Length: 260
Length: 260
Image (cartoon, rainbow over all chains, first blue to last red; front, side):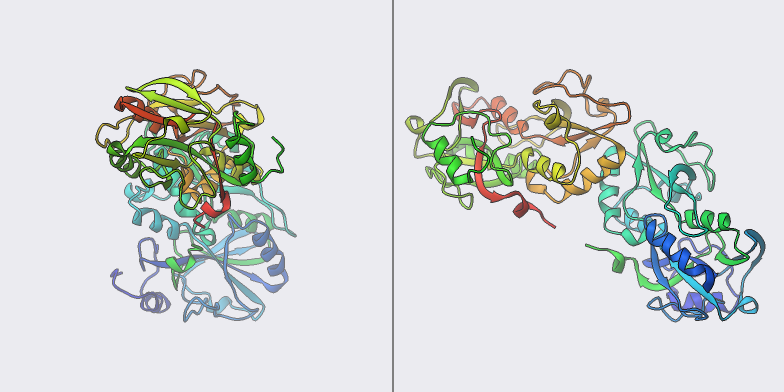
Protein backbone atom coordinates (compact mmCIF):
# COMPACT_ATOMS: atom_id res chain seq x y z
CA UNK A 1 0.00 0.00 0.00
CA UNK A 2 1.31 3.52 -0.73
CA UNK A 3 2.90 5.06 2.35
CA UNK A 4 1.09 8.33 1.64
CA UNK A 5 -2.33 6.91 2.58
CA UNK A 6 -3.94 8.23 5.74
CA UNK A 7 -4.99 5.82 8.50
CA UNK A 8 -8.61 6.23 7.39
CA UNK A 9 -7.75 5.50 3.76
CA UNK A 10 -5.78 2.42 4.81
CA UNK A 11 -8.69 1.17 6.93
CA UNK A 12 -11.03 1.67 3.94
CA UNK A 13 -8.72 -0.48 1.80
CA UNK A 14 -8.64 -3.10 4.53
CA UNK A 15 -12.40 -2.88 5.11
CA UNK A 16 -13.10 -3.48 1.42
CA UNK A 17 -10.85 -6.55 1.37
CA UNK A 18 -8.34 -4.88 -0.96
CA UNK A 19 -5.57 -5.26 1.64
CA UNK A 20 -5.27 -8.29 3.91
CA UNK A 21 -1.59 -8.44 4.94
CA UNK A 22 1.01 -7.31 7.48
CA UNK A 23 0.75 -3.63 8.51
CA UNK A 24 4.39 -3.15 9.53
CA UNK A 25 5.74 0.12 8.13
CA UNK A 26 2.29 1.43 7.16
CA UNK A 27 0.68 4.67 8.43
CA UNK A 28 4.00 5.97 9.72
CA UNK A 29 3.51 8.13 12.80
CA UNK A 30 0.22 6.51 13.81
CA UNK A 31 -0.54 4.00 16.55
CA UNK A 32 -1.22 0.40 15.54
CA UNK A 33 -2.90 -1.91 18.04
CA UNK A 34 -3.10 -5.51 19.09
CA UNK A 35 -6.76 -6.60 19.10
CA UNK A 36 -8.59 -9.01 21.41
CA UNK A 37 -12.36 -9.62 21.11
CA UNK A 38 -14.16 -11.59 23.83
CA UNK A 39 -17.69 -12.35 25.04
CA UNK A 40 -18.79 -9.91 27.75
CA UNK A 41 -18.78 -12.78 30.27
CA UNK A 42 -14.99 -12.97 29.98
CA UNK A 43 -14.26 -9.32 29.33
CA UNK A 44 -14.07 -8.08 32.90
CA UNK A 45 -11.54 -10.76 33.87
CA UNK A 46 -9.48 -9.92 30.80
CA UNK A 47 -9.66 -6.21 31.65
CA UNK A 48 -8.43 -7.00 35.18
CA UNK A 49 -5.60 -9.10 33.70
CA UNK A 50 -4.52 -6.19 31.51
CA UNK A 51 -4.76 -3.65 34.32
CA UNK A 52 -2.72 -5.90 36.63
CA UNK A 53 -0.05 -6.42 33.95
CA UNK A 54 0.18 -3.07 32.21
CA UNK A 55 3.65 -3.49 30.74
CA UNK A 56 2.79 -6.50 28.51
CA UNK A 57 -0.91 -5.52 28.19
CA UNK A 58 -1.19 -1.72 27.83
CA UNK A 59 -4.84 -0.86 27.15
CA UNK A 60 -5.38 1.82 24.50
CA UNK A 61 -9.18 1.43 24.23
CA UNK A 62 -12.06 -0.89 25.23
CA UNK A 63 -15.41 -0.97 23.41
CA UNK A 64 -18.90 -1.37 24.85
CA UNK A 65 -20.45 -4.86 24.64
CA UNK A 66 -21.69 -5.36 21.09
CA UNK A 67 -20.17 -2.09 19.86
CA UNK A 68 -18.17 -2.29 16.64
CA UNK A 69 -16.47 1.07 17.27
CA UNK A 70 -13.52 1.77 19.57
CA UNK A 71 -13.72 5.14 21.30
CA UNK A 72 -11.10 7.74 20.37
CA UNK A 73 -9.23 5.66 17.77
CA UNK A 74 -10.94 6.94 14.60
CA UNK A 75 -13.80 5.82 12.37
CA UNK A 76 -13.44 2.11 13.08
CA UNK A 77 -15.57 -0.94 12.43
CA UNK A 78 -13.75 -3.65 14.34
CA UNK A 79 -15.53 -6.37 12.27
CA UNK A 80 -13.75 -5.36 9.06
CA UNK A 81 -10.85 -3.01 9.80
CA UNK A 82 -8.21 -5.54 10.82
CA UNK A 83 -6.53 -7.13 7.75
CA UNK A 84 -6.64 -10.64 9.15
CA UNK A 85 -8.17 -12.21 12.28
CA UNK A 86 -7.55 -15.44 14.21
CA UNK A 87 -10.68 -17.14 15.57
CA UNK A 88 -10.26 -19.32 18.68
CA UNK A 89 -12.72 -21.95 19.89
CA UNK A 90 -12.07 -23.79 23.16
CA UNK A 91 -8.64 -22.13 23.17
CA UNK A 92 -7.62 -23.51 19.77
CA UNK A 93 -7.26 -21.40 16.64
CA UNK A 94 -9.80 -22.78 14.18
CA UNK A 95 -9.93 -20.18 11.41
CA UNK A 96 -7.98 -17.23 9.99
CA UNK A 97 -10.35 -14.79 8.27
CA UNK A 98 -10.27 -11.26 6.83
CA UNK A 99 -13.74 -10.21 8.07
CA UNK A 100 -15.63 -11.23 11.23
CA UNK A 101 -19.02 -9.72 10.33
CA UNK A 102 -20.56 -13.20 10.07
CA UNK A 103 -19.17 -14.10 13.52
CA UNK A 104 -20.25 -10.89 15.27
CA UNK A 105 -22.42 -11.14 18.40
CA UNK A 106 -24.07 -8.49 20.53
CA UNK A 107 -22.09 -9.59 23.59
CA UNK A 108 -18.61 -9.17 22.11
CA UNK A 109 -16.20 -6.68 23.71
CA UNK A 110 -13.22 -5.35 21.73
CA UNK A 111 -9.86 -4.45 23.28
CA UNK A 112 -7.12 -2.44 21.55
CA UNK A 113 -3.69 -2.87 23.18
CA UNK A 114 -0.46 -0.98 22.50
CA UNK A 115 2.12 -2.42 20.11
CA UNK A 116 5.90 -2.16 19.85
CA UNK A 117 5.69 -0.57 16.37
CA UNK A 118 5.11 2.76 18.17
CA UNK A 119 8.24 2.73 20.31
CA UNK A 120 10.36 1.28 17.49
CA UNK A 121 9.40 4.32 15.44
CA UNK A 122 10.48 6.60 18.30
CA UNK A 123 13.83 4.77 18.59
CA UNK A 124 14.51 5.00 14.85
CA UNK A 125 13.49 8.68 14.83
CA UNK A 126 16.16 9.25 17.51
CA UNK A 127 18.83 7.74 15.28
CA UNK A 128 19.05 4.35 16.99
CA UNK A 129 19.37 1.20 14.91
CA UNK A 130 16.59 -1.26 15.70
CA UNK A 131 18.11 -4.55 14.62
CA UNK A 132 14.94 -6.40 13.58
CA UNK A 133 13.97 -3.36 11.46
CA UNK A 134 17.39 -3.02 9.80
CA UNK A 135 17.58 -6.77 9.20
CA UNK A 136 13.99 -6.86 7.88
CA UNK A 137 12.99 -9.57 10.35
CA UNK A 138 10.25 -10.09 12.91
CA UNK A 139 11.45 -9.10 16.37
CA UNK A 140 12.65 -12.12 18.41
CA UNK A 141 10.31 -12.96 21.30
CA UNK A 142 10.91 -15.25 24.28
CA UNK A 143 8.89 -16.82 27.05
CA UNK A 144 10.34 -15.87 30.44
CA UNK A 145 10.02 -17.24 33.97
CA UNK A 146 8.33 -13.98 35.09
CA UNK A 147 4.79 -14.62 36.37
CA UNK A 148 2.07 -12.23 35.33
CA UNK A 149 -0.65 -11.50 37.91
CA UNK A 150 -3.59 -13.87 37.29
CA UNK A 151 -7.18 -12.69 36.78
CA UNK A 152 -9.99 -15.24 36.52
CA UNK A 153 -9.03 -17.80 33.85
CA UNK A 154 -6.23 -15.61 32.49
CA UNK A 155 -2.64 -16.41 33.43
CA UNK A 156 0.69 -16.36 31.65
CA UNK A 157 4.41 -16.09 32.01
CA UNK A 158 5.53 -12.77 30.54
CA UNK A 159 6.64 -12.88 26.91
CA UNK A 160 9.35 -10.37 26.00
CA UNK A 161 10.76 -8.98 22.77
CA UNK A 162 14.51 -8.38 22.48
CA UNK A 163 16.50 -5.66 20.73
CA UNK A 164 20.32 -5.39 21.11
CA UNK A 165 22.07 -2.04 21.60
CA UNK A 166 25.45 -0.68 22.59
CA UNK A 167 25.51 0.56 26.20
CA UNK A 168 25.08 4.23 25.35
CA UNK A 169 22.25 3.47 22.91
CA UNK A 170 20.68 1.18 25.54
CA UNK A 171 20.62 4.08 28.02
CA UNK A 172 19.07 6.34 25.35
CA UNK A 173 16.51 3.64 24.43
CA UNK A 174 15.44 3.39 28.08
CA UNK A 175 14.98 7.17 28.19
CA UNK A 176 12.97 7.26 24.96
CA UNK A 177 10.70 4.30 25.77
CA UNK A 178 10.02 5.64 29.28
CA UNK A 179 8.00 8.37 27.55
CA UNK A 180 5.65 5.75 26.06
CA UNK A 181 4.07 3.65 28.83
CA UNK A 182 1.02 2.99 26.62
CA UNK A 183 3.16 0.96 24.22
CA UNK A 184 5.09 -1.23 26.70
CA UNK A 185 7.26 1.58 28.12
CA UNK A 186 10.82 1.03 29.32
CA UNK A 187 12.48 -2.39 29.03
CA UNK A 188 11.85 -4.79 31.90
CA UNK A 189 15.30 -6.40 31.75
CA UNK A 190 18.72 -6.01 30.19
CA UNK A 191 21.86 -8.11 30.06
CA UNK A 192 21.99 -11.75 31.12
CA UNK A 193 18.97 -13.54 29.55
CA UNK A 194 19.17 -16.51 31.93
CA UNK A 195 18.16 -14.26 34.86
CA UNK A 196 14.64 -14.14 33.38
CA UNK A 197 14.60 -17.77 32.26
CA UNK A 198 15.71 -17.38 28.64
CA UNK A 199 18.07 -20.17 27.58
CA UNK A 200 19.32 -19.25 24.12
CA UNK A 201 18.82 -15.91 22.35
CA UNK A 202 19.38 -17.63 19.01
CA UNK A 203 16.23 -19.72 19.54
CA UNK A 204 13.33 -17.32 20.09
CA UNK A 205 9.94 -18.80 20.98
CA UNK A 206 8.28 -16.45 18.47
CA UNK A 207 9.66 -14.32 15.61
CA UNK A 208 13.18 -14.43 14.22
CA UNK A 209 16.65 -14.44 15.79
CA UNK A 210 18.62 -11.25 15.10
CA UNK A 211 22.35 -10.48 15.10
CA UNK A 212 23.91 -9.36 18.38
CA UNK A 213 27.36 -7.80 18.12
CA UNK A 214 30.09 -8.36 20.74
CA UNK A 215 29.79 -4.84 22.10
CA UNK A 216 26.00 -5.00 22.46
CA UNK A 217 23.66 -5.74 25.35
CA UNK A 218 20.24 -7.36 24.85
CA UNK A 219 17.33 -5.23 26.05
CA UNK A 220 14.03 -6.97 26.81
CA UNK A 221 10.60 -5.33 26.55
CA UNK A 222 7.30 -6.72 27.82
CA UNK A 223 5.51 -8.00 24.71
CA UNK A 224 1.93 -7.97 23.43
CA UNK A 225 2.13 -11.70 22.75
CA UNK A 226 1.69 -12.13 26.53
CA UNK A 227 -2.09 -11.50 26.45
CA UNK A 228 -2.35 -13.90 23.51
CA UNK A 229 -0.73 -16.62 25.61
CA UNK A 230 -3.06 -15.78 28.52
CA UNK A 231 -6.00 -15.98 26.14
CA UNK A 232 -4.95 -19.38 24.86
CA UNK A 233 -4.38 -20.67 28.39
CA UNK A 234 -7.90 -19.59 29.40
CA UNK A 235 -9.39 -21.99 26.79
CA UNK A 236 -12.42 -19.75 26.26
CA UNK A 237 -15.25 -21.18 24.18
CA UNK A 238 -14.91 -18.25 21.78
CA UNK A 239 -12.42 -15.44 21.15
CA UNK A 240 -10.99 -13.46 18.25
CA UNK A 241 -7.64 -11.69 17.88
CA UNK A 242 -5.78 -9.93 15.10
CA UNK A 243 -3.42 -12.19 13.16
CA UNK A 244 0.24 -11.59 14.15
CA UNK A 245 1.61 -8.48 12.39
CA UNK A 246 -1.80 -7.59 10.92
CA UNK A 247 -2.69 -4.77 13.31
CA UNK A 248 -5.53 -2.31 13.74
CA UNK A 249 -4.40 1.05 12.31
CA UNK A 250 -5.72 4.02 14.30
CA UNK A 251 -5.97 7.80 13.89
CA UNK A 252 -3.98 8.35 17.11
CA UNK A 253 -0.48 9.71 16.55
CA UNK A 254 2.38 7.95 18.33
CA UNK A 255 3.45 11.35 19.66
CA UNK A 256 0.06 11.69 21.40
CA UNK A 257 0.99 8.69 23.58
CA UNK A 258 4.13 10.39 24.94
CA UNK A 259 3.68 11.23 28.61
CA UNK A 260 6.39 13.89 28.44
CA UNK B 1 26.96 17.58 63.10
CA UNK B 2 23.26 17.14 63.96
CA UNK B 3 21.22 16.22 60.89
CA UNK B 4 18.55 18.74 61.89
CA UNK B 5 20.75 21.74 61.08
CA UNK B 6 19.76 23.85 58.08
CA UNK B 7 22.24 24.47 55.26
CA UNK B 8 22.79 27.99 56.61
CA UNK B 9 23.44 26.71 60.14
CA UNK B 10 25.86 24.12 58.78
CA UNK B 11 27.73 26.76 56.77
CA UNK B 12 27.98 28.91 59.91
CA UNK B 13 29.56 25.99 61.78
CA UNK B 14 31.95 25.46 58.88
CA UNK B 15 32.68 29.18 58.56
CA UNK B 16 33.58 29.44 62.23
CA UNK B 17 35.97 26.49 61.97
CA UNK B 18 33.81 24.31 64.25
CA UNK B 19 33.37 21.74 61.47
CA UNK B 20 36.13 20.84 59.00
CA UNK B 21 35.29 17.32 57.76
CA UNK B 22 33.42 15.28 55.13
CA UNK B 23 29.90 16.55 54.37
CA UNK B 24 28.46 13.22 53.16
CA UNK B 25 25.01 12.65 54.68
CA UNK B 26 24.68 16.24 55.93
CA UNK B 27 21.91 18.71 54.94
CA UNK B 28 19.75 15.91 53.57
CA UNK B 29 17.65 17.14 50.64
CA UNK B 30 20.01 19.99 49.72
CA UNK B 31 22.52 20.28 46.89
CA UNK B 32 26.20 19.96 47.71
CA UNK B 33 28.76 21.17 45.18
CA UNK B 34 32.24 20.54 43.91
CA UNK B 35 34.22 23.80 44.05
CA UNK B 36 36.92 25.10 41.71
CA UNK B 37 38.48 28.56 42.19
CA UNK B 38 40.73 30.01 39.47
CA UNK B 39 42.31 33.29 38.42
CA UNK B 40 40.13 35.17 35.91
CA UNK B 41 42.76 34.62 33.22
CA UNK B 42 42.01 30.88 33.29
CA UNK B 43 38.32 31.05 34.11
CA UNK B 44 36.92 31.43 30.60
CA UNK B 45 38.82 28.39 29.33
CA UNK B 46 37.62 26.38 32.33
CA UNK B 47 34.05 27.54 31.72
CA UNK B 48 34.33 26.40 28.09
CA UNK B 49 35.71 23.05 29.28
CA UNK B 50 32.70 22.58 31.58
CA UNK B 51 30.20 23.64 28.95
CA UNK B 52 31.75 21.28 26.39
CA UNK B 53 31.70 18.38 28.88
CA UNK B 54 28.46 18.89 30.82
CA UNK B 55 28.06 15.32 32.06
CA UNK B 56 31.29 15.25 34.15
CA UNK B 57 31.29 19.05 34.73
CA UNK B 58 27.71 20.25 35.33
CA UNK B 59 27.85 23.94 36.26
CA UNK B 60 25.51 24.96 39.09
CA UNK B 61 26.86 28.50 39.56
CA UNK B 62 29.79 30.76 38.60
CA UNK B 63 30.79 33.84 40.60
CA UNK B 64 32.02 37.21 39.34
CA UNK B 65 35.79 37.83 39.42
CA UNK B 66 36.74 38.64 43.00
CA UNK B 67 33.25 37.91 44.34
CA UNK B 68 33.08 35.71 47.41
CA UNK B 69 29.37 34.96 46.90
CA UNK B 70 27.85 32.45 44.47
CA UNK B 71 24.56 33.61 42.96
CA UNK B 72 21.44 31.66 43.90
CA UNK B 73 23.07 29.17 46.26
CA UNK B 74 22.39 30.92 49.60
CA UNK B 75 24.31 33.22 51.91
CA UNK B 76 27.76 31.99 50.97
CA UNK B 77 31.28 33.24 51.55
CA UNK B 78 33.37 30.94 49.37
CA UNK B 79 36.52 31.82 51.37
CA UNK B 80 35.25 30.13 54.53
CA UNK B 81 32.19 27.98 53.76
CA UNK B 82 33.91 24.86 52.45
CA UNK B 83 35.15 22.62 55.30
CA UNK B 84 38.51 21.95 53.72
CA UNK B 85 40.29 23.25 50.60
CA UNK B 86 43.18 21.99 48.44
CA UNK B 87 45.56 24.67 47.17
CA UNK B 88 47.44 23.94 43.92
CA UNK B 89 50.55 25.74 42.69
CA UNK B 90 52.03 24.86 39.28
CA UNK B 91 49.55 21.96 39.16
CA UNK B 92 50.76 20.40 42.41
CA UNK B 93 48.77 20.35 45.65
CA UNK B 94 50.83 22.29 48.15
CA UNK B 95 48.47 22.87 51.09
CA UNK B 96 45.21 21.64 52.56
CA UNK B 97 43.52 24.42 54.56
CA UNK B 98 40.16 25.13 56.19
CA UNK B 99 39.96 28.81 55.22
CA UNK B 100 41.29 30.64 52.14
CA UNK B 101 40.74 34.21 53.32
CA UNK B 102 44.49 34.82 53.46
CA UNK B 103 44.86 33.49 49.89
CA UNK B 104 41.97 35.46 48.39
CA UNK B 105 42.61 37.71 45.39
CA UNK B 106 40.41 40.11 43.51
CA UNK B 107 40.82 38.15 40.27
CA UNK B 108 39.60 34.78 41.58
CA UNK B 109 36.50 33.20 40.00
CA UNK B 110 34.55 30.51 41.87
CA UNK B 111 32.75 27.61 40.19
CA UNK B 112 30.20 25.33 41.88
CA UNK B 113 29.66 22.05 40.03
CA UNK B 114 27.04 19.35 40.64
CA UNK B 115 27.88 16.35 42.80
CA UNK B 116 26.69 12.75 42.87
CA UNK B 117 25.35 13.11 46.43
CA UNK B 118 22.21 14.63 44.88
CA UNK B 119 21.34 11.73 42.59
CA UNK B 120 22.35 9.14 45.17
CA UNK B 121 19.75 10.69 47.48
CA UNK B 122 17.13 10.40 44.71
CA UNK B 123 18.05 6.74 44.13
CA UNK B 124 17.84 5.89 47.84
CA UNK B 125 14.53 7.80 48.14
CA UNK B 126 13.18 5.54 45.37
CA UNK B 127 14.06 2.44 47.36
CA UNK B 128 17.20 1.50 45.44
CA UNK B 129 20.25 0.26 47.31
CA UNK B 130 23.31 2.38 46.51
CA UNK B 131 26.16 0.02 47.31
CA UNK B 132 28.78 2.57 48.40
CA UNK B 133 26.20 4.12 50.73
CA UNK B 134 25.07 0.79 52.23
CA UNK B 135 28.68 -0.38 52.61
CA UNK B 136 29.72 2.99 54.10
CA UNK B 137 32.49 3.45 51.52
CA UNK B 138 33.56 6.11 49.06
CA UNK B 139 32.15 5.42 45.61
CA UNK B 140 34.68 3.65 43.34
CA UNK B 141 35.94 5.89 40.52
CA UNK B 142 37.87 4.92 37.40
CA UNK B 143 39.77 6.67 34.64
CA UNK B 144 38.34 5.72 31.24
CA UNK B 145 39.57 5.93 27.65
CA UNK B 146 36.81 8.46 26.83
CA UNK B 147 38.27 11.79 25.72
CA UNK B 148 36.70 14.96 27.04
CA UNK B 149 36.58 17.94 24.68
CA UNK B 150 39.63 20.14 25.31
CA UNK B 151 39.45 23.87 26.08
CA UNK B 152 42.62 25.95 26.35
CA UNK B 153 44.98 24.20 28.79
CA UNK B 154 42.21 21.95 30.13
CA UNK B 155 42.03 18.33 28.94
CA UNK B 156 41.21 15.01 30.54
CA UNK B 157 39.98 11.52 29.99
CA UNK B 158 36.55 11.18 31.59
CA UNK B 159 36.55 9.83 35.14
CA UNK B 160 33.46 7.77 36.05
CA UNK B 161 31.92 6.55 39.28
CA UNK B 162 30.41 3.05 39.42
CA UNK B 163 27.35 1.70 41.22
CA UNK B 164 26.10 -1.89 40.67
CA UNK B 165 22.41 -2.72 40.30
CA UNK B 166 20.19 -5.58 39.22
CA UNK B 167 18.82 -5.10 35.70
CA UNK B 168 15.42 -3.81 36.80
CA UNK B 169 16.99 -1.43 39.33
CA UNK B 170 19.46 -0.32 36.64
CA UNK B 171 16.57 0.63 34.35
CA UNK B 172 14.92 2.52 37.22
CA UNK B 173 18.20 4.25 38.10
CA UNK B 174 18.54 5.46 34.50
CA UNK B 175 15.01 6.87 34.65
CA UNK B 176 15.58 8.61 37.98
CA UNK B 177 18.97 10.12 37.09
CA UNK B 178 17.70 11.34 33.72
CA UNK B 179 15.64 13.86 35.72
CA UNK B 180 18.83 15.38 37.17
CA UNK B 181 21.15 16.56 34.36
CA UNK B 182 22.66 19.20 36.69
CA UNK B 183 24.18 16.46 38.85
CA UNK B 184 25.70 14.21 36.14
CA UNK B 185 22.36 12.91 34.78
CA UNK B 186 21.93 9.41 33.35
CA UNK B 187 24.82 6.95 33.36
CA UNK B 188 27.17 7.14 30.37
CA UNK B 189 27.85 3.39 30.24
CA UNK B 190 26.69 0.08 31.66
CA UNK B 191 27.93 -3.49 31.50
CA UNK B 192 31.37 -4.44 30.20
CA UNK B 193 33.93 -2.08 31.81
CA UNK B 194 36.64 -2.87 29.24
CA UNK B 195 34.58 -1.15 26.53
CA UNK B 196 35.44 2.20 28.18
CA UNK B 197 39.00 1.26 29.08
CA UNK B 198 38.51 0.05 32.65
CA UNK B 199 40.66 -2.98 33.42
CA UNK B 200 39.60 -4.19 36.86
CA UNK B 201 36.58 -3.01 38.86
CA UNK B 202 38.27 -4.18 42.05
CA UNK B 203 41.05 -1.64 41.57
CA UNK B 204 39.45 1.81 41.31
CA UNK B 205 41.68 4.77 40.51
CA UNK B 206 39.96 6.79 43.25
CA UNK B 207 37.67 5.82 46.15
CA UNK B 208 36.97 2.29 47.36
CA UNK B 209 36.02 -0.96 45.61
CA UNK B 210 32.46 -2.11 46.40
CA UNK B 211 30.79 -5.52 46.26
CA UNK B 212 29.16 -6.52 42.97
CA UNK B 213 26.80 -9.50 43.15
CA UNK B 214 26.53 -12.10 40.37
CA UNK B 215 23.14 -10.83 39.23
CA UNK B 216 24.23 -7.20 39.06
CA UNK B 217 25.40 -4.94 36.25
CA UNK B 218 27.86 -2.08 36.82
CA UNK B 219 26.49 1.36 35.89
CA UNK B 220 28.97 4.16 35.20
CA UNK B 221 28.26 7.85 35.74
CA UNK B 222 30.38 10.80 34.58
CA UNK B 223 32.20 11.99 37.69
CA UNK B 224 33.16 15.35 39.17
CA UNK B 225 36.74 14.19 39.61
CA UNK B 226 37.09 14.76 35.84
CA UNK B 227 37.45 18.57 36.16
CA UNK B 228 39.98 18.02 38.97
CA UNK B 229 42.09 15.92 36.61
CA UNK B 230 41.74 18.57 33.90
CA UNK B 231 42.79 21.21 36.41
CA UNK B 232 45.88 19.23 37.43
CA UNK B 233 46.82 18.60 33.80
CA UNK B 234 46.63 22.34 33.06
CA UNK B 235 49.45 22.99 35.61
CA UNK B 236 48.08 26.43 36.44
CA UNK B 237 50.25 28.67 38.59
CA UNK B 238 47.43 28.90 41.17
CA UNK B 239 44.12 27.16 41.81
CA UNK B 240 41.97 26.08 44.73
CA UNK B 241 39.41 23.27 44.99
CA UNK B 242 37.34 21.72 47.77
CA UNK B 243 39.02 18.75 49.45
CA UNK B 244 37.48 15.42 48.29
CA UNK B 245 34.20 14.77 50.14
CA UNK B 246 34.27 18.18 51.87
CA UNK B 247 31.69 19.91 49.70
CA UNK B 248 30.01 23.31 49.58
CA UNK B 249 26.53 22.96 51.14
CA UNK B 250 23.90 25.12 49.41
CA UNK B 251 20.34 26.29 50.07
CA UNK B 252 19.16 24.72 46.77
CA UNK B 253 16.98 21.65 47.22
CA UNK B 254 17.89 18.57 45.18
CA UNK B 255 14.27 18.48 44.00
CA UNK B 256 14.73 21.95 42.46
CA UNK B 257 17.28 20.45 40.08
CA UNK B 258 14.78 17.93 38.65
CA UNK B 259 13.92 18.83 35.06
CA UNK B 260 10.67 16.86 35.25
